[in-house]
Amino acid sequence: MNLIQPGHLIRKTRKAQPYNNVQPDQPKQKFITDALQKRKEEHQFRSLKGIDPEAGSMKVIREGKELINFCSNDYLGLATHPKVIEAATVYTQKYGAGATASRLVSGNFSIHEQLEEELKNTFGFDAAMLFNTGFQANTTVIAALADRNSLILADRKIHNSMLQGSILSRAELKRFHHNDYAHLEQQLKSAEGKEYNRIWILTETVFSMDGDRNDLDKLICLSEQYNALLFSDDAHAIGVLGEKGLGLNHGKEGIDISVGTFGKAFGVFGAFIGCSKPMKEYLVNHCPGFIYTTALPPGVVGAISKTLNLVPKMDDQRDELLRNTAYIKAELQALGFNTADSDSQIIPVIIGDEKDTMNLSGWLEEQGIWASAIRPPTVQQGLSRIRITLTAKHTKEQLNRLIRAFKEWGKR
Image 1 (spheres, rainbow, N blue to C red):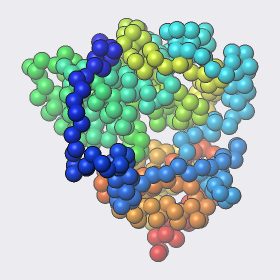
Image 2: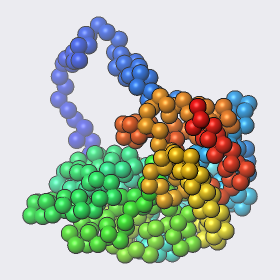
Image 3: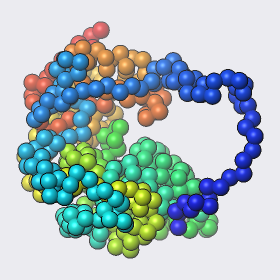
Image 4: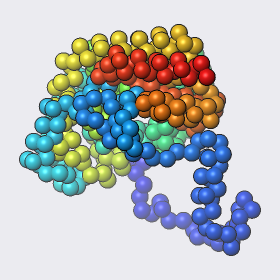
C-alpha cells in the first residue's frame, strides 16, 4: 500500500540554514526570479498565449489574426462535432454541471459506471476505470502500483507524467535506451535474483514528442519472459490507429495497464485505464489520484459516451488523416528537414538550437501558422523542434501553406 497517511507528514523542524550563497536578509522568493532568468537566458522560458478557436475549422484567432492550427491533438475533429456537443448539453441538463464529490463519497453517478462498462466492452478489457486526465492517471496509478522495493524500467522517451509517477512511487528507476529492447533485456537480466517485489516496464505506443512507435509484441514477450508487469500508454494511438481506431494496445494479451485519453482524438477531456478486475479493485482502494478527486463532470461523461459511439465508425476520417500525414512528412523531408522516425500524425521538425527554434515558431506565426516550439526540458538538449500535429480536418490548401512557409524559411 502506497497511500500517504497523515502521520507520514510529520517532520522534525530545524533552523533553516543559508544555502547557495543566499543570505537570510535576501528576498525569500529570490529563487523564483533566479530560475526564471535562467530559463530566459537559455531560451527555454514559457508563457501562456491566448487563442480563440474558430468552431468547426482548424483555425484560431490570436490577437485579431487568423492562424491555421498545426499543434492541436483533436485528430478527428470531434471537439466541435454537433452530436458530441449535444450529448454534453443533455447530460449537463439532466445531471448537473459537476459531480460534486469523489466517486467513493457521492460522486459515483450511474453514468460513470455505465461509461466504464462501455469502455470495457468496446476495448475488450476485463475492467475499465475513469480518471480526470492522462497525467493524473499515469502519475497516481504508477505511484500506487510500485513502492520502494520495486524496480521500474522506463523507455528513455516516456511522457513526463510516467516519470513523475515513478518518482512518487519511490521505486528504483532505470531508463533503457529508446526502443532498444536488447538494452531492456540486459536490465531485466541484471534484476534476476535481486529482491524486488515487482518489476514494471513503462512505454508509450506512440511517443508524444517524436511520433514514432514501440514494438509492443517484443515488449509483451520480454515482460512475460522475465515475469515483469507492462504499463502501456496508448494516448496518441487511440482513435487514430488500430482496428476501428481502438489503438495499438487493443487486442493484445499481456498488457497489465493500458492507458487511454479522451482529450486527443476523442476531442473531449479525461482518461481511462484498462486492466484486470482485481487491479481495478486494488486501485479503487490504493490510488490517491482516484480516491481524493472529484469525479468527471456529467457533461464530459456524456460527450465521451457519444464519441465512443462515433470513433469506431470514422475510418474515412482516419484515412484522410493518414493521407495528410504522409503528404506533409514527404514534403518536409524533400525540403531537407529532419522529421526523425515519426510514424504517426505527430511530426517533429527538429531544428536543434533553442533560439533558432523559437525564431522559426515566431516566423511561422507571422505567416499565419500556429505551431509551437518544443524545447528542453521537454526534449533533450540540442533536439528542440517544431512539433506538427495533423488532423483529418486540415485542407489541402492549409497543408500547402504549411509547406510553403517551411520552404521560405529554408531559403533564409
